[in-house]
Image (cartoon, rainbow, N blue to C red; front, side):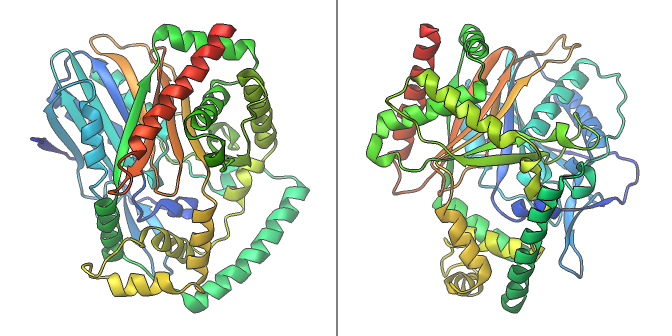
Length: 478
């Protein structure tokens, strides 16, 4: 594709702030990106967009960081980054052009040593343009990207507005409320367990660097291609769904989750519907000591539980049971426990990541002997944990950004659709991204395709359509 590339120089005041990755290290040096795509009615000026991106970088410091490793092997985001924000511009060809562009963009690794860990792409036409924002998951969640779209649109419509820096708020124990004594006891037990695990890892420790990362990223993207299936609900379909959920005292997310479970069962049959583990992303901005809203960062956690769709019950009954399960899992500080009790050695996190994503290296890569030798050592703690994690991947992973409220002040440019594309994995079954904007809900199914899985997309498209069918039928029945 013929892209015009623009380097957007960040015009921040001088800052030398550093932020330890902590729990965000789980996404360090792996091919794990999130993206939002805004379909915008109106003509977007390239020059205006460049000026707006400079303001966005000033507002949200993590958009302009790189990563440094200190002598203790701790990783830090640093604002000492000279690299500009990358903006690519090309002509918009169709309503689905963004899918091809984003699928190809996933092949390009982010440079952790140089930064930044975010990219912008404008597919431009006179009447409607698509703005793609793709980000490495370690610095942000989907809601942060949706907020950035709002910031960009507001500033494009109000170019005279001056902006201020919004300091990052990190998901660290100091920012969360105190936990009950019962939870403290549980966390202490976990700390003692992880201390033993970390000591064992110290004796087996293997350190990884950016050369290793670029090798596994290239091998992974040669083996697999990120594919995206999209479904859009109209204004009336979205409002009818929301009304049905309110009437039945459930959330849209519960209804969508059960719809995917029902759709999978309808297409694949009972025999293949044997992974009942569900993982749901959860926004934790309102769970800090001081709730945060417009902060850009990785401010999400998740819940994981077992749920089996029961065909002898109605779709509505299944949604009610699912919703009750979700509410139980969300009670108290359970969702914060993994963040408060994060005791894992950072180099062990790296080891687990490289054991997971390094298995597709061949002898053509420079670090093949190092990585293959490491992965073949089944007694290594990182390799053992990686294999355990792969074997326990959920059957459904869903991330719903909710309804994004459109700010006032949009004049010449108006948001038509918003799409959320989350990362996927060859080890995951159904991975869904959901967002509602301008009264219209959009869904994406994300999967990794290789030469042996050419029919996977066809099957997932059938599951998507069948899932929407289950949902539509339930809404019609009231």
